[in-house]
Image (cartoon, rainbow, N blue to C red; front, top):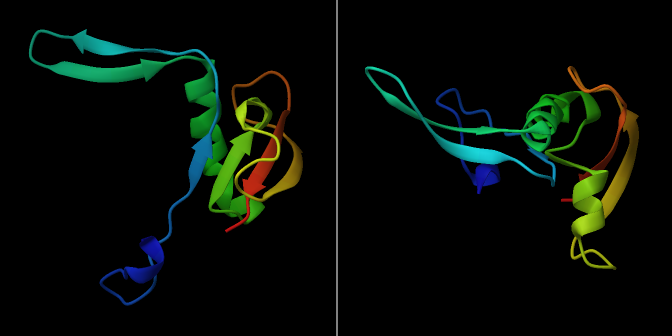
Length: 101
């Protein structure tokens, strides 16, 4: 849908998506004046860091090995390996794949 939309200056909209499969905790964190819904966990952190890498790796959607392993064989989409990538705050490099659009 983004391909058909334009920014006010006429350029196409672009978005990067990072996908990681794993355990996480989701819920409300209450403060005195507001409630915030949040998600925490290593999978959340990897997905967020991977999203940042979409421009660098030239792909709109990137996923980790954990997500690739969760897909059926053969996967329902084309995947291109992008190698092992260092993600900020993650100790070991992560195997990354791009979804072929």
